Length: 123
Image (cartoon, rainbow, N blue to C red; front, side):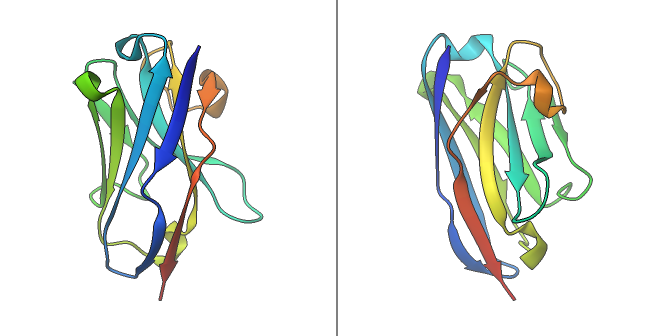
């Protein structure tokens, strides 16, 4: 099992940028594909982005495509989510998660989750 800890959330104005980090400990980090999800108050958790074990392939949700970029550094056991041109509708708690199943967008495909980091975008 891998333990995940997110960081980098905060309050930002619309149009601004943030970079989220998720650091893993425990099992071999490079064994896992990784994903970012988010959950706004009163809404279901939704897929944001995912990246393969070696970082060679990524998938981003249509709602963030062209604004957010997922990446990873296996030497640091860390994945990132660079978020640019933020909008108020991006406000949510952001979670990272791991899976052994490869590139997946479904919540149920992920086994381990972090505690989340809050992102608030003001208009």
